[in-house]
Image 1 (cartoon, rainbow, N blue to C red):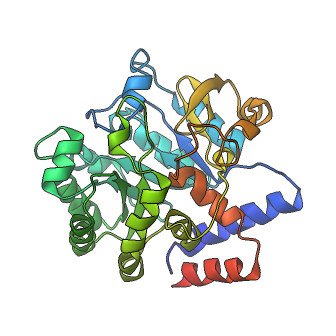
Image 2 (image 1 turned 90 degrees about the vertical axis):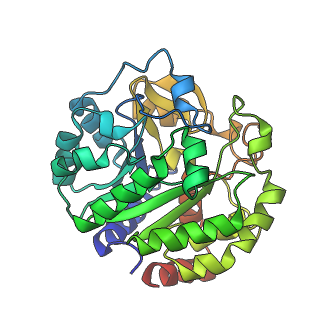
Length: 332
């Protein structure tokens, strides 16, 4: 089974419940950023540049839990920033677990060995390490020599402690397919349970030369098709068809809302046109028609990032074929 049975059951129940209530927009995953602080300055990251005047700000555990209750998402992705620098992380994870939430702890892994004794494996916690390539590539993107060796060591330590471990890899125009294939093989050998993969978003400060256009993206992902069958990729088959240019998807940014120390980020994880003080305001006051591939918004035109299109792939699975594809994928 691709995911934990409890996670699949909880998400399915959440979707059905909201459909019955005829809720047009509801959250599946809360992107929770308790701090903007990070111990890296990665080339493709927008956060430390967007919020450079607010790096000292952080959410209290109470504010984090309030955000969780406000949006009702069954999954909480603790990201940032680097969540392992957040001083109350252990308490936050414990309280989220008590509330029955499934948790992705997203980390660059540099501090993991120092913090591992404060993290207790449980059926609801998944550790998601960011790895963008083999040693030379990963070290270059993070700007830190030895970063790859340290994250690989952290992965092995996490598996020894019996954590569920997945990795997230961002795809840039310079990403080498053969290197990527070797990376997945290496990570699987280290015990990684599942893989997430996503094209990078074209942040203006980085420059267009780093990012795929959708027409280029389809060719790249088609060449990865054998790897999708070989390893446990956690992205849905409908999303993978989308990045291969085989189907159209709308974006569902409201399904993965972001809460950070400034407020509820609108409209999405990539764009911050404004921040709201409550989840209700985010949903009701964001003009969603202005965003996504159908909007003609130039900032959305080339975006294929998984946090917007992945939930759309699940929620838009309307045909019998799509539903059966998703069921078969889950039990593969």
